Image (cartoon, rainbow over all chains, first blue to last red; front, side, top):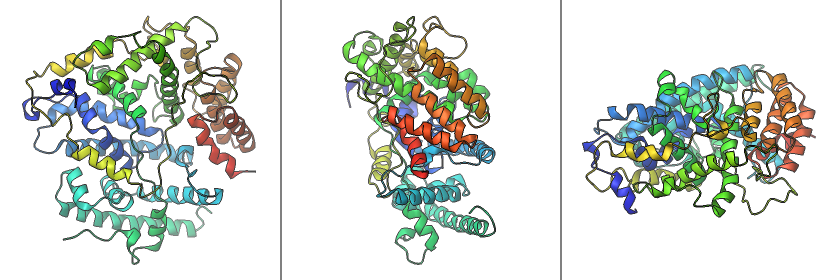
Length: 190
Length: 313
């Protein structure tokens, strides 16, 4: 690290952090967490900013008793939940998934791309039915394939908590999957 | 106790879940461009730029990009904001190369970290460069994205927000590790700084960055209302292809009339494509999308509408 960065930092417990410092240290964590919670497409930028507005307003309440990432994860949870309520309303009105959620240029053929896209959309729809927090744990473990102790360290919780959240998340996932299946069979879409 | 077996590796897991997970996309990494853009916005937050708006509603965040969003928010508006930022940055990159000393506010702020300084300088130069082209009706400004065949010198296009990468990319681990394990500036070396230190630091950075190109109503004197980019943005912003497609289409048409080769031509075409789709005019949407991809092959919007093209005849 170069000299200027040093002059910014003081022992954490001695003073209130500044939002820019929090950003510099944990931008990637927030960015990834929001996606794990289901924020996607162009909304991601907007929600990212909302998080840091809240951080700016609430950072004085951070009492250093937990890890900063734990606290940030909590902020992300609240903002992402709020976002999801809005996004749901919007999606119900529009009845469409945004174009930007349809990548797939990495696929070998257009057919593969279409299949992958459809699978991703269905997966997102199912994941969106999970609690935001469980969704995040599920994605970290099943999609990103992070080991549980790493997830525990990120969230600042005991690894046992990760196990139980993952267990609950899987249950919710299976239920949501079943709901989607029966909806598709009983004259739903397609 | 050891980790449970991942569903992807567990033959007893629900088959359908395994199949879906096979196509899952890992979170997108925070690329340097996006990081810098957000850093500039966060500096503004730190300077209290959003306190009033944010106090009322969390949505205040979106104003940072200088675009007011209708309640609930339109994806496109936000996209426009982003594209604006990307576009301006792209345009600015060239400017910065030749006139690095135009604005030295950021660089002279001794206590700034390297990254913040970079983004801030970018931001200040941006605001500086836009009024410079201000009074001319049709600026020879660098296009946001190179039009195919257009002779745009040496402006490297900023890469589009990349699509979620394929599963099992190692980057996910990297992101996670970096955010926890790396010695973060926050947690590192002690040094005697008073509580007021950081705030003083950000203030001079953010003062000149008023987001001139897209700032709403009370335009400060740094952003003349005649600025073409501002006018283009005004014309397109507020048009929601979802809630009112005909109006959005009309806006696009008006933009095309006034700024056929404007800096936000790609955004306009994207708006039109979305509006046409919303109205069920899929063939027209596809035709327009095709033309748009041909004209702006490197625009992020092009990659967004490409799926449309492969979906139809």
